[in-house]
Image (cartoon, helix red, strand yellow):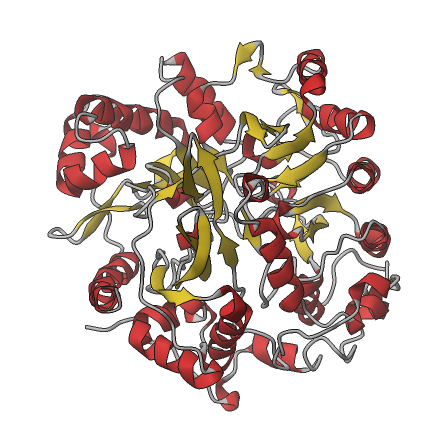
Length: 623
């Protein structure tokens, strides 16, 4: 039975309240809501709900301090500002000084216990986030960002978000994914007229040229595009999937033959976000077909235009592009692309991915690059070393380029060989590479979390503050260097792409987490569902028991790693029944193994698998 029923090509009389609000600005061209005055009214720290909806597209997100709300019952309103950096850079030394000084002047971080201090948050979309901004500083912060020729436009909201790409592919001769990310981001950039007016910024570098035509109510929901890279391993070129293309609405993968990019394969319909109140699902993007470089932007325009016209504008929980792809199908979408653009997509190609984190030293031509591990993307001076101060020192004293990776780390590029020892000396002086005096473990380096409490108002519980302590405990139990990764998200939005990890924990209540198991290159982790029993196991595990369950799963992997070196593959092949049986009999977890009846979530995933089977038959047709 079909239980996910989006209202595609929604009639205007059925529009949600968000859609009606967006219409009032005529596609971010008119200040009919009084945004200019509202952001300069300091009688209160919050802003009107309608204005909060619109300024998301300007990179502003209204939040409140969740810890204070929990303890005092009062909403201490704060703001997050997100800077969109296509392809993660390059960021110049001058630009980084502006970013660092803004964090020093306007932010604090309580992401870690102890003395709150300034910090910079790097995201899985290669953005920079500033947290704990006060209303009185919003206009100044965005103006200072713009003076460095960086912008917050497209940072949040219902538009094409920051285009992400492999940050170092450009240095391997045959494919500059970073350059294409900049081109795509510029094409899908929102109209700048209202942005310039509200924040009174110099608009010389923001001239609107030939670009995508947004509707008066923009897109139905956010839309994400990612571009894989091409790097060289030995004498072989490989597709680097550091961006996890299949977790995006559109993924772009270069097709390489004889050391040359001959076309691009487009993937459609990925997305991590779910909804606990309605049947929904996470999904991997599916291959749609190939296109020439000359037709790439035209093809992307047609896909986003189709979504803009056909996406659900009544039910925001079903408004993401993945529901259009999975419900209407690939054949329908290929036909629509032909109708909208005249482009006939080529056949689907087999592609093998290699996911790189871009950490440590890498040879890039006659120069070097170094990937800096930043735990959960939080640049701060703490027990992991004085990394925030270190980056500022390096950018002030070395002529290097800086990139943000899609895994919340940093890459220093274009380092001369003669500077390698000097850079390593700086690492040592600032304590990089060690946490509380111990080297970063493999488990820590591979794992990731989103912000979660206390600043994200969507989160149910901690993630960024929780994961380091979980890793500490697992290291203490002897699992420091197991080749497995853990993903943690504070809520079902799953911004840190946790389900791409073999083991992931998703916030399901305050200090409660749901297990997702089996993520990897070609699959997403899913809840531990017993399909025969129609029940979820480990839906709400208390935070103080997560280490026990994770350890039991790591033991199961170690016992079965002859199946595969990849833990996600091991868990998928073993299957939920065997995993449930193992945990029911494990002395550390058996008391937690109670079935949880959650029909909405189970039904959503059941429908996803039925739809996936149909869509995979279409993939076979177009190979």
